[in-house]
Length: 114
Image (tube, rainbow, N blue to C red; front, side, top):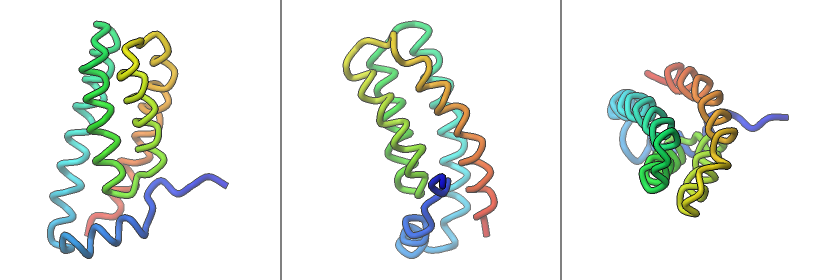
């Protein structure tokens, strides 16, 4: 069985800590930033800029974990390590998997909007 796209315990904890009124802003900001960061990853890969790649992957990893997109966060963590190693030759396939997973994260988070 596949893990849930969004871990409800993590999401509920965030909602409790931040307040339900703040959730729409958090989700909207996350979706905007993640879309831009995915583009940054693609650009950094094409231009062979490992540090830019690492930073973008790190940002996706952290923000995704906060919202409960734990599997997505783990995929971004793998990309962060690739960038940290400085060799982007192996980044194409994991990046494609991350990009393929994003629509599911986006749809699930949009469904959680109050």
